Image (cartoon, rainbow, N blue to C red; front, side, top):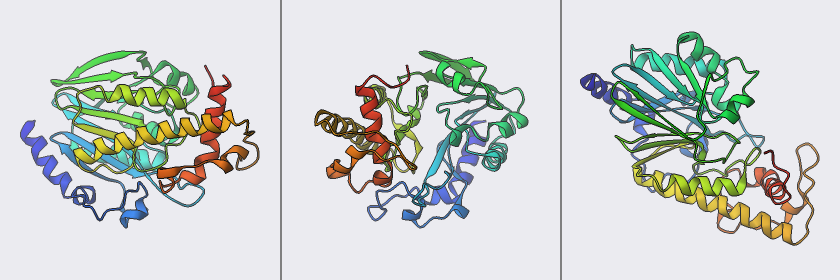
Length: 320
């Protein structure tokens, strides 16, 4: 299996994603696919960051401004089966993910960890379940409730920590706290020091706050940083070198801290934020000062919801 894994790793590195791994200073600090000269035709793509551990990217539906980012899954092949961290957004994306897993291993998919319950990470789960009916879907209790009427409902949950060992590989499924959703999970592989953070980590884009717990997100990121990690894998954004992934996790934390601080500043001034209209408009957000983060992709398009979410937190109006 190890030899097969090395062969597969080399083959995967010949894919477009492998070609982009040699990140240089000329590559823009942006999670937008267009910033790297890519289009949706260049996806899906994948590469091995370590033997038998594959980063998989497909595209997210365009934002209202037309910008497109990638959605990241993590595939781990063991001698006794495959484990998938997060799916993709729709039936086509789900089938493409299935096809890729089958290319990487003839073994069955044993577990799917739902790190985020948002549609861009679970919309293709029907195709995954159809391909491997015996696969066990695992989420947090909160995400299980969110997905209660979805085509594929997680049957097992993790409230704090669960350890799964498959084919000699240990997977620590961690509930580090609420962040982008009310039910985020992370998966840590202690033997290789890989940490899949899903939507807890938004790399080189403005972290969307539409269902977030802003201050708790800060705490969750800080908790993630206490683990002994070599590779931090995001739910959105490109995966480059280990050093870049670590540095940009720090940047993501700083942006999140800034969002909370700016929301608190505007709230203290008594500026209103009704967040009404289509698209919703937060009046206070007109006075926001993004300072060093003004150029972060998708900031302006998401600032109204972000400030409103901080207001909701301060006013005790977030869902429990």
